[in-house]
Amino acid sequence: MSRFSFFIFVLVCFLQTVLNGFVACAIKPSKQPNILIITVDDMSADSLGVYGCTVGDTSPHIDAFARTALRFKHAHVQVGNCMPGRNIMWSGLYAHQTGVEGFVQNPNADYPVLCDLAQQAGYFSAIRGKVSHSTPYTPYAWDAVLDVGRDGKKYHVKDPQSYGESTRQGIALAKDEDKPFCLMINISDPHKPFYARGSRAGRPVDRFTPSKIFEAEDITVPGFLFEDEQVREELALYYSSVRRADDAFGEIHSALVDTGHLDDTFVFFCSDHGMPLPFAKTQLYYHSTRTPLMIRWPGVTPSGEMDEMHMVSAVDFLPTLLDVMDHPHPTPDRLQGRSFAPLLRGFQQSERDFVILQYNENSGGNRHPIRGVQTKESLYLFNPWSDGNRKFATATTGTVSYRRMQELSSEDADISRRLHLFDYRVLQEFYDIQSDSDCLENLIGYTEHKQKATTLRGRLKTELERIDDPVAVLLKESLDHQEIERYMNQEDQRAIENREKRRAKRGKSKRPEAGKLGENALQFRHSGQVEKESSCRIEISFDLPREIGKQKLHVTLKRVLSDQTRALNERIDRQVVEVEGKASVELFFDIPTDLEVKAVRFAAFIGEDFGSNRIYEVGSVIEIKD
Image 1 (cartoon, rainbow, N blue to C red):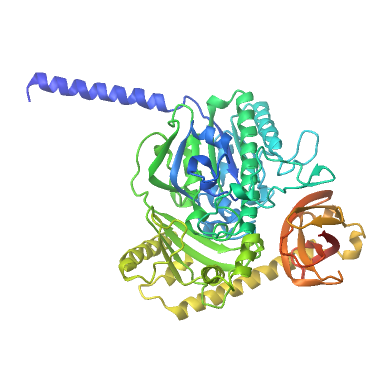
Image 2 (cartoon, rainbow, N blue to C red):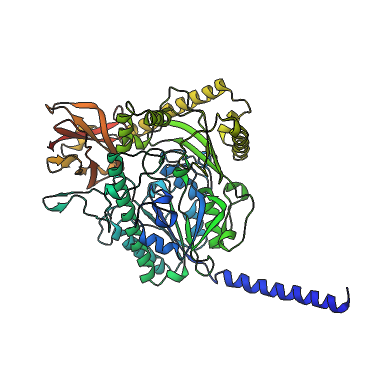
């Protein structure tokens, strides 16, 4: 090489270095951005227009935001239920490491979570909604909980306007502390109860009306469900609730604009899992775990683009946020997720071609462990609990869609097969996601798919071993059914012992004699009559002693015989909320169209469990109008 050529080479390298420096300065914010995390509850990714929703106009505000953000085509959460899933998001750890495998808190958590690390990074951290679901235990070390307005009254979780007010409140509190804000605003919709259509005495049953209400004829039924008028009606209420979630998002975004923080705030949007209907919520199917992840980082992320190359997941959320905060990660062995901040800056990452999925138990403490591995092309699921006898326990069995599966299964062979799979599963499932994202045809027994399924099962085993998941030992080349059964017997016993411990703890520390609560501890308020194919509004006032703290209020809708003297065993629906002190709650229940009775009965009790930890109960009968 001549001296001249060498000089030119050195000059080019120098100029490239300088250029890279300019680029780095251009994409790296000059200071820590504010952080606004917005989640929706129980919403499938494809319920949004920008993710290909077949129902029109469900999400105008979120779609508008998407045009300013980077969205991910292949983003997944680890599990289709809320509390364990949200704990994975904000800890960077899988559920067997967080100790929150279901809906039981972990008071002995020895790891930091988002609000701890945000505070260490100099942020003011605050949360609205899902407070008990977002950390290993409560109360936790948030700087503020934004569930109460300036007038001292608790916000209604279905009130879109209140979410904007909470956001303004959090921003103002951070300003008072002279800190950047890290706000987590968790929108309740479209979690059940769905928007309640109808009116009574000229007034709407549900006072928080979405900006658009969908009717059954507007709906396209997802492929994992089935065509039925009652299913359409339930989906219409779901999509109306999606629109109300979008209204809440619009209020939050307006608060960001009005306070002058649109251009200095990192906005992170996702759903915790899929819609609260069969084969979505409390599952690990494609539409259970796919989340509509969208991120806008002013000056960094491109506008209106979609990353179609990389797979990211909920366990990666916390390490990514730490990089955005420019805050050190906990020691390497404390995080199981991996930051995808480089993707936000326009770079690529290798080894982002699969996601590990992990389900353990439902809100009732029933353990049905499932493990899975999702790629862009395929999904493999391992169900060690499935033996043909155990029946899956899930929140979606109280839905109209599930009841219709039961009713129609005797006359429709396809629905009967789907119902049996839903209830009992099989040990292994394998789906071609590119051609069957609804996971309708299990390919595990097909010779032509055997090698792919075996490869994915091997990858799952390797990853479970890497994260010390106890299910890994069961994934041998030749599955040992006796070993699997021994494992499940241990899991069943563990569920029993955990429930007994919770009952004993509550019975010892929080269970007063029922008589000490007074005869007005629970009171129903309702119209006394309701029509079929409508929603019934129930208001329950409660007056609980301060010393018993938070308690669960269980409200069940049951069928009643014509003489109104006793309820049939089959319940129609149940909702559980946490209550404390003296206040009231408002719940909405859908009245089925197929009722052949003249009344329904609402029964409520306070306590952890009806059989052994019931503190107080009350009932009320409502007539059905013909």
